[in-house]
Image (cartoon, rainbow, N blue to C red; front, top):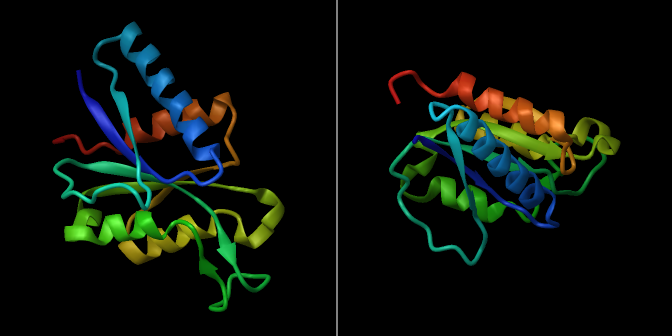
Length: 154
């Protein structure tokens, strides 16, 4: 059985809720066909001991911003710093395959801006975005994007 890691950060519980549903969906898929991957969701926070990542992984990041009304330099991310620090720790970002994002569409140009900045900072693709804690179709699409983006030699 192959498990794929997804590192995530959750402040208000939306990402945590989404990841629980993703893990359950992946288990169902694996139960139907043992060749289907399972998901190992790993929550990163200020209280997590940093470790050197040993295998490839994906990241799921929510958007929390402060300052300004657009996407200019006056805006800075808040609350997701632990994830960025974890990715920087011993160059963990080098094992990252891609980024998934959640946000609130009410924030227009700021929708998933944190993930877009992570993608630019680490040179990794933004693979999929969804609103708040997502819907069933988002869980299925997220899982499909993981499958589509796992390197064949992994």
